[in-house]
Length: 109
Image (tube, rainbow, N blue to C red; front, side, top):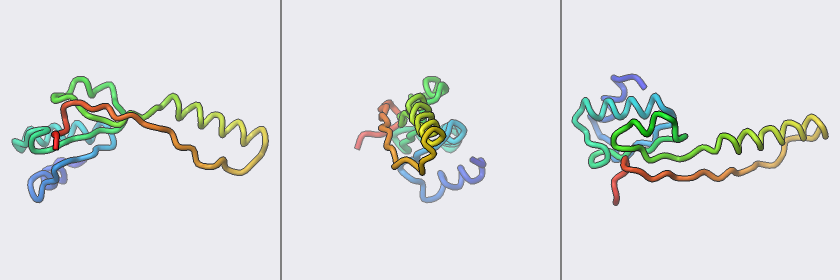
């Protein structure tokens, strides 16, 4: 996320929460919030996606949606081998549950 864009978002019509889709966006939001005097989670709730290894080092600790990478790989492998072996069309959609890891970056409503 470009710092100018992030600061613009946080400065004018600031949202009450942000869902960041990758580590770089999470770190940028934390940095920009600090630079703009915005308190996480009092002024801005932040949620990440993937439960990265960097998240334990953030303060406050980040609430996130856990991506079950191992399960995704297992299902993808099964679909691929099934397609190769049986030469069938695409498998119906598979829904893989995610977990919410609730920590300190989200304000209680």
